[in-house]
Image 1 (cartoon, one colour):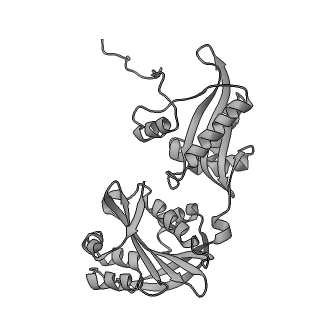
Image 2 (tube, helix red, strand yellow):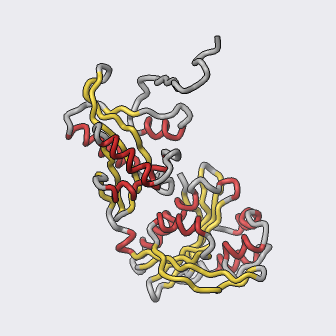
Image 3 (spheres, helix red, strand yellow):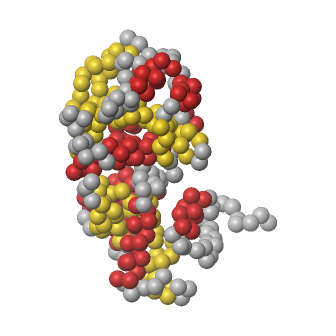
Length: 320
């Protein structure tokens, strides 16, 4: 689990080592930052945290004793605004959802100040991956400052995004996906678990076929955005008797560690009671070590080993 520690001069060399060129430095720090980063640049950022009240807070993100990222929060106390800024992930940790976890922690921290009503950020418009991450976090696009930065002879547009206090604290609610529109909204999240799904149409068609045999799709929603999903069915066999079988269970990669998976399993246990069954069963891949840890924490125990055989395979299950 990621946690934040104050940024100090001891971290300067490490953060500087995460940048290799001018484009990376400006993408991180904005047009006022240049490459190579220097201790003087970083010290100036730290100094903004020494005012009363501070106008900038800086953190390092740490996980299992290793520094995995850096993030800053600029504070406009007069107008009740906070700006997420200068987010960077250690190169070896990128693509693992660390940035989303940092952003969520710092946004929560920002709204912990009663004076802050709005959290915003600026992102260069070409950075579609980051924009998608921020949208999943709950930030909304407000507009674009066209041709607002000059980098290596290029002009970059800047996208402005924000979330208001009441939007951030919008409650999470459970609701079954009952319509094709709901199922389509669930597709990007289900595709994280089932990457072989080709498109929304393919997912909807499979859902319709499976629904005819008792499949239900339960989602934990924040507004119109599902943050965790479970596909399940109530069934009976000679092994377990009546039971709830979980086909699919996934939490958005940007929200893992937030408790959404725990809430989803608790709701599935409640569904067991609703349907008068006393057993919940699911399968998981032998290679899914993170999933195994989660299930153990939630009180699930491994009671069987499942074998399968591909009928279309040209190979026998064992060598002759």
